[in-house]
Amino acid sequence: MQSQAPSPDDLGGVDATPRHVAIIMDGNGRWAQQRGMDRTWGHREGVKALKPIVKESSRLGIEVLTVYAFSTENWRRPLQEVDVLMGLLVEFLAQETPELRDEGVKIRTIGDIERLPDSARRSLDWAKAETAAETRMVLNLALNYGARDEILRAVNRWCRDDAATPLTEECLAGYLDTAGLPDPDLLIRSSGEFRLSNFLLWQLAYAEIFISNKLWPDFDPEEFRRAIRDYQARHRRFGGLG
Ligand code: FPP
View 1 (tube, rainbow, N blue to C red):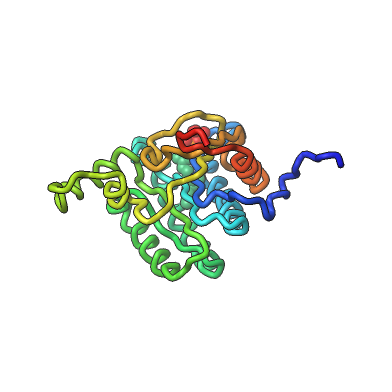
View 2 (view 1 turned 90 degrees about the horizontal axis):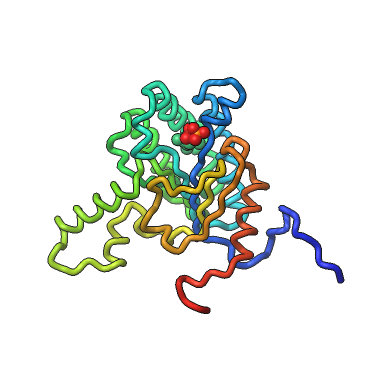
């Protein structure tokens, strides 16, 4: 029998679905500029691209989807762009939370959200409370997130709590914002850039990496399945020989 190249829809039933997928949603600004539009329009389209990826993740049985929505470095962008991003977050939560809840998605965050504007914090509190009981999937929003900041906050908390006990990997992991979540198996970055950009530096230690050439607003479930198939074709060794 002749073997055929798998189609993008050929994922059903394949083992080794990643438990946790992390995404750097890059390229919104370029997407808009290529169309002669303001960068913020790209962010608006970027939010639209997120929903089908959340749905597809849930359909594929992925347990955790972490998306880099706003980094500690993003404060350096023009105030107007920061305001638009915060407004989009509030809009996204108001519009999508009920449907996410109905689909069994729990919303959580990583990053220092105390520094976000009040409106964003209130929306997040509401969305988290609305979805707190859901267990099918976690949508983990990285907001005012930077991995170095996360590690420093974790170590400082450990110093306050328990500095007499030697710090182990498990102990530190328990102080990170991702406490209780499995490490990402797969990191996807859109827009063809090969950088980690201060994202999940501790947790990505053994992750597979998939770089997509699509700019984030063009990133669709078909490209997502391509990334998952690529992951499934790899042989993870976790530093061993097996
Ligand atoms: C990178 O594109 C993207 C961001 C800085 C923000 C990502 C945010 C979204 C997709 C929308 C917000 C998400 C939620 C959940 C409301 P870029 O502006 O750096 O693009 P560029 O590299 O082309 O300039």
